[in-house]
Amino acid sequence: MLIFMAAALQVSVFGITDDTEGCTDKEGTIALSSCYSERAEIYDKRMRAAYPVALHFAHGDQRKALVRSQQAWLKYRDAECEFYNLEQGTIHFIQSAYCMLDLTRRRALELEQYPLP
Image 1 (cartoon, rainbow, N blue to C red):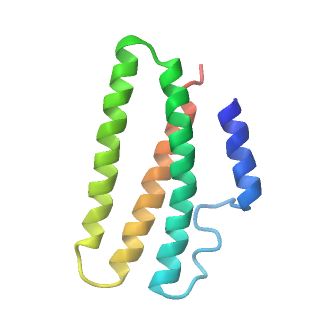
Image 2: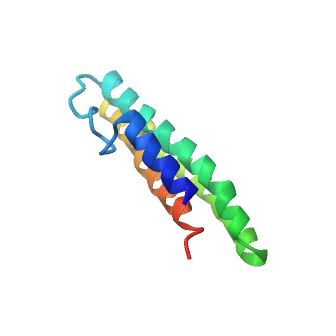
Image 3: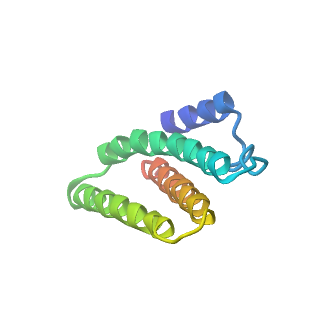
């Protein structure tokens, strides 16, 4: 419950109702990818806050699995989003930044739901 209240507060403080709100009207590669990166940082903070809460509610083998899962997920996210940076062309910077936003948002929301009955 505390996580959801914090998430709601964050949404109201940052005025974000959509992950890409305010980003899609940005012009230029740097402005758009920076906007996506800023949004990814918000979800990264939520993910990092939700992880210890989820660990607290996990027990025994479930806790061990969550630790392994998070470690593997971080490696997956970084490799998946790096894929776009390895191509030439400015569109790939935008794709990489959006990849970080999208995957981190999904993981944050997932971890926030773990403690639910």
